[in-house]
Structure formats: C-alpha cells, structure tokens
Length: 403
Image 1: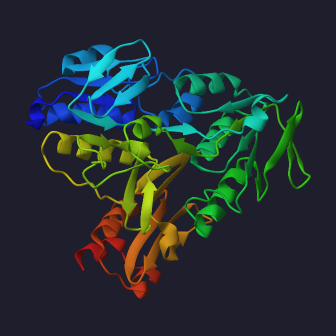
Image 2: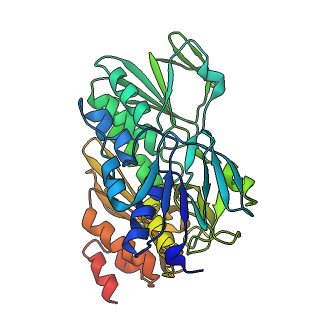
Image 3: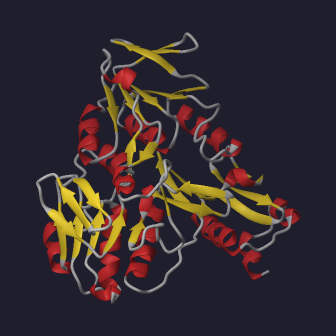
C-alpha cells in the first residue's frame, strides 16, 4: 500500500491528534484525514487550562487552528463525536450518530480521563475536576477573593491551580497523600522548594494525609484534622482511555504499548500522546508520558512514520510548570540517580542533576532556562560526567557537552 494514499482516521482531537494531522500533511500525505474529537471545540492547547485560563480574568482559549483552518488543511474535523464501535478486520469505526469511517491506517490519540473520587462527588461540598475548557472556565468563575479553596493532590495540576487561586485572592490549602509535593518526580530538593514557594504565598500544605469525607464546611482528613473549605478541586492524576484499543484487540491496562515509531501490535494501527505506553531508558520501564511536549513531538514522529518516513522518537521526558513567578522544568528521571544540587534552593534559582553510574538520568531547573537546555542534551546524549565537576559551583554545565 502507498502510505501517502492511505485513508487515515485519527481518534482523539487533542494536542497529539491535532499535531499528528498537521504533520501528515507536512509530510506530503495526500489522501483523506479524519480527525474525531468528543469535545465540541476545535483542538486547543491544554497547558493553558491550569495557567492563563485561571489567572487571567478574560483569557480566551488558544486553539491550534480554527474550524476554517482545518478545512484549508484538508482535514475533516468531527467535533462532538464519540467512537462507539470498531472492527480491525473491516477497518471501520462507528460513531454515536451512526456514521461509519473507513480507514487504512488508524491513529489512537484517545488521551486520558481524570481519576475521580466518587465518594466525594455527591457530598455536601462542591467538588470540581479540571480536564477541559469548560472545566477551566467554570473553575475560573469560582476563584473569588477570600474564598477558601482546597486542592486535593499536590501534583502539577494541583499546584498550578493553587498558585492561580492564591493569585486571585483565595485562601488555599494543598492536601497530598504522599510524603511530599510532586511525588511523581521524587526529588527532595524540589519538594523543599515547592513547600517554601507555596507557603510564602499563604498556602497551607498538608502532606501524608487523605480526605476521609466532606462536610458543608470543608474536608475531614484520615488523621483527624479538618480543613475549612468552600470548594475542593481534585487533581489526583489521570487514567488512559483504552476502551477503543481493547475493541481493536490491543491489550494493556496502563496504556497502548508502542514502538519508537508509534506502531502498536496491530498492523496499521498506531498510538500517540498520553495514551501511548513507551519505553523510558531513564526510568528503565514502560510508561505513559503525560505532558505537552510528548503529546506534540511523539505524535509528530508517529505521523511521519504513518506517512512512510520512518521516524523513531526516543527523546527523554521533559515538562515545565509555571507557579506564581517561578518556572520549573524537569527532564528525564530525577529519582533515577544520586541528586546533586547546584545553586541556592532558598533563593529560588537552582539546578539538580541526577547521576547513575556516571550518566545523567534526569535534572530539574528552577528559574534557570539555559541550564535546562544543557540538561536535556546531557540526558539525551548519555555522555558520562564526573561528580566532582558537578559539585564544583564554578564549573559550567555546558562544558560537559564538549567533553
């Protein structure tokens, strides 16, 4: 089959699906491309939901392209459309409205859904989740000066919403079940900094505790403490949307396992973005990478492969988070080696470098964009480094790239 002439259906019109559609056209794909999304909006940039959309009173969502823009690109964008059936043998998927789409190649960019706390959803305290534009706009209207907001979960979403809420004049409490903030990163240095950062802006931080139940006045914790709140935002992670993958015969509870080219175990079926389970060298395991950069770049590489241009994607994970006036960037696996700190954590400008057997496995840069550019190259290149160099505050990281 001439891949340039293949009929392509992309299920999922988020960051990954949209960028894949663009990349297919850029790679010279000439046949039909259908982009199917459940939301009633065109594809948009998702990081804004916990940042600008909450902080700025009248921020408008940033769309990747308008509806007209997708038509000009020759992509058939189907919004408010959900896939309810699939047949890998007949190469067809069915939508809720009865429409069927036939494909030669299929890209699954179905993403994730938020993990919920159903025991809190019908309680006396209003509980919110943040996943789409409508969630963000609803939450923004509720972040009013003096309002008491509880953030259940001290991950990226919880901390970014906490900073937005504090910036809007709310009283903020952050509740994290693990022993520290951003537990998925596993950095004691970053936890220390984040505790100081949020506490200095008036937030109360409670780690090592879970919510037992809600009342009309707030939340009861499992250790007996009570948190006064008028609204709770739950940000305890996400889970992959894999129902369609299972219908197509693909197995996996943690995601859809793919090769570096985005291919699954089924011929002609690919996966990209948050739902794709990739091998991480720095973590030494299969994992889903849930960030904007991977959703875009891994999807672009997968699209090129679908267009017949073999493109492997093996870049280490990288993401950033803006909280108050701080920029935090993380690459690779900071918990994968001995963490060395360069700079002053208390001053809010520092870098951590994690080293295992002489190789940089990950790093963190707080308010240090230039150092992160070096760290990303070090993690990707697998160059060996000397601990003594990293421990020398006068040694410039960029010198390691020329070694």
